[in-house]
Length: 514
Ligand code: HEM
Image (tube, rainbow, N blue to C red; front, side, top):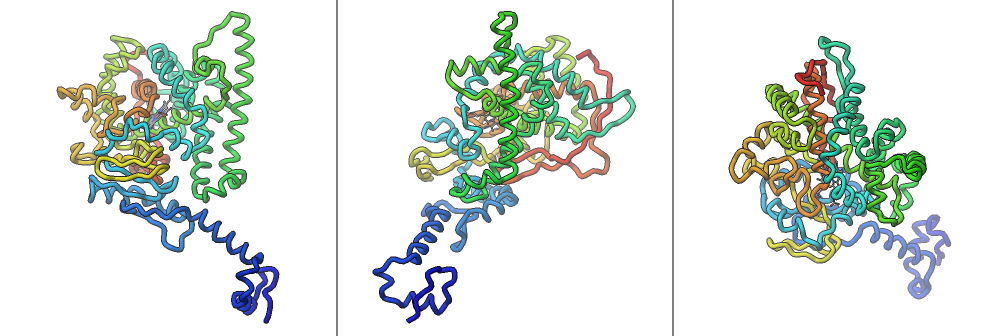
């Protein structure tokens, strides 16, 4: 009887049959048995545990699929259609999908209030799963946003306005009031927002440092793209793959560059502080205070802050600008409100609060284009059964569908942008507070809801208003004639403003000097 070759890779079929037929093989472990056991173990590892949940699944793996990679790729393009169809036909029923981070149980909107403050549902574990670096030292970041940034909103309004005036002039140059110019909206807005946010986060010197602005803009893109690409790899291979993926390599280089820039700034500041001549009051100092002597990485906290703040705010302001250009009849009314409020109150938090039409228009753009088609993503820290009977096992990922925001039962003509919608609601007794941009609730999950609702929303709201005031009073805006209309983009669970859109602008003389 032919013996199998000592190497399985060169074993002929005959040899293999003879080997299988050999009775001694059972009692004599050979490299073949070990290789087979290894292969089964690897397949099992990649395949993960098969779920026995009775919750319907929209895109389950086929029997012979050993990883989620194909499902995840497919979900990137079909996500919205899949979930829209499910919740249209089953508005109150939970469903499972394989999304970017693996299987997610998507709960219907009516369960929002049930999960918003449930301590068994972890937000930080979800962030860690979605973007590991983003969860490092996130407690310090939240502390600074809530204790300092929100408290000092009044104090930061004037610096915000001052920096906006400078950067808007740079990004939208125009020599006279006659000629129309074209701008790539997303690119120019990203430059405006990164500069204005950095003014508050790092002070007036660093916010004009081109190297810092490049890092702060690029890190979010490279970091999240790296995370997205890595998630297409099976979990056990990611520790290895990240060394070779170009976006991960770029993100690591961004962190190194951020450390280099910030270390120089910190050294300079230490010397100045020791001389007792200068005091600083920006997020660099707030982080020092919040850390209370604990070791932390100043570059990582600043990058975490900018990755939460800059692209989200850029996206929202860009969306508002596209919506205003598509609905230009509201622009004059907005200008009148702005001029009235600024004349009476100047650059103050309360002045921005009094611009209720502007607030309404921004909230409407966020309603149509929130950060995603789901919200309140969490990881279950225990087995959990919800009031409708839905069971989620420990370590399962859940989220709530944001479907309410586009449901005709919640909003009349939900697919039409109506800049006055939330102003009308605000004037309705009982809805004065819920209709404000910064208010959260199951009907509007633009900033999430509950204990992890976006803590930066008060700052984001003010920043968006300050930028829009400058854009509207200093320029006329319009869509490029003949170009395709802006379309909200979706990728997996994420939504974003059309990244391709160009707008035309023309200088105008503002009614008041700003
Ligand atoms: C228009 C701009 C923004 C939008 C649409 C937005 C949206 C969101 C959303 C949807 C969440 C998740 C809430 C949840 O899952 O319940 C969130 C969380 C968060 N946002 Fe924002 N955000 C914006 C601006 C900002 C800014 C400017 C900052 C910082 C200054 C910030 C800092 C954060 C942080 C730290 C969290 C995590 C909260 C936690 O850990 O509990 N965001 N944001």
